[in-house]
Image (spheres, rainbow, N blue to C red):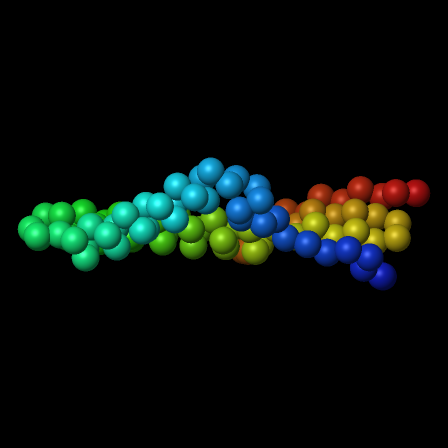
Length: 93
């Protein structure tokens, strides 16, 4: 691909807004559980919620950053992956 006309990654919020808001609400609920907790069991549940939410968002973010759509004057390509890349190209001629 000689000249790149457009290159983009998928956006997290735009692709699945309800799932994105769910993970953010889970992290916020975990923070609230830690701050407002009177017992240690609720604090551990809050820490678990924060860990799961941040881990899910991090994996999703990494997945979005490793997917790239590139448009050139004669072809379109989709690249996905870190260690095992898969490349799909379509020639426009």
